[in-house]
Amino acid sequence: MDIPALISYNTNMVPVRATIAALAPYVPGRQPGGAVVKLNANENPYPPSPRVLSAVAAATAEQVRLYPDALARGLRATAARVYGVGVENVIAGNGSDDVLTMIVRTFLDPGDVIAVVDPTYTLYETLAAMQGARAEVFPLTAQWELPEGLFGAAARVTFLPNPNAQTGTLFPARALRRLCEDARGMVVIDEAYAPFAGVSAIPLVKEFEQLIVLRTLSKSHALAGLRVGFGVAQPQVIEMLMKVKDSYNVNAVSQAAGIAALEDEAYVQERVAAIVQTREWFERALAQRGWETVPTAANFVLAAPPGGTAAEVVKALEERGYLVRHFGTPRLQRYVRFSMGTDEQMRGVLAALDETQQACSP
Image (cartoon, rainbow, N blue to C red; front, side):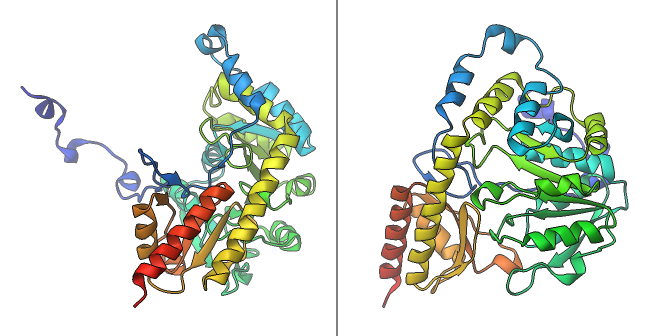
């Protein structure tokens, strides 16, 4: 009997939940092999702090052989100090996506409703659907501002990235406060890109029991491959999240690396400033070439080309060794998202765009 016969089965006999069978999974940015400049997943183009590499290299056989600290106490204590809260206000996750999973497990039952904007990070809807919940979508205005209907929405959980995940839009502090004041359920402010904007809603946690703020070390601290993230909330909320987290959700090496990354704040600030500077001149360079750019406070630029379709631009750039992101959704159909690389990489992108435009000119 050959291998395919061994693994074949009648899918009608597999007891998959109907919700999962019908689920449209979240699709992350492509992770290609080969020689390509990868600018499609908003990863940090610079290496992490040298302290991180030292911490990883110093991992002992005992750290690898034994289970890690299930409560990630050292990592949480370091994060609490950096974020200006108590350790009881922090939960650690295998990336902030892990904390999102804890949130939907804790607060959503089948039939419940979450509130999200459009466009935004689509994983919110995917995780809610896994719980049998549904999303009520509130489109951002034509100027990418928060819609009035989002405030006071009848939702168990409202999810909002700030800056926004697909557009880079920075929502004003007064709007976040109002969102918490008017909330009829939990509010999750996802601050994956906040270090590039220099803002945070974490101080609001002391005022609002229904608020959870998410942080990640993937982007600003260049630890995307090690998966370290946090939820910050009032102690009674953290206590509930602790009940549903996976037993050993942050491995020992990631905990050590996360502590080292957080402790080298000067290094992180230097790299963040470099990325912001690159973003600013790259955005101006696109505008000078006739691109329509969306104001951004993140580590990426969303822009619509002056000629041709976004899909055509993405294909042309990939042929020249640059991988960028295109979302085929109605609001973003015209746009290309460029994650910020080094200055040299972004100059290469511009040269490739100029070459493409010249090739398409009559």
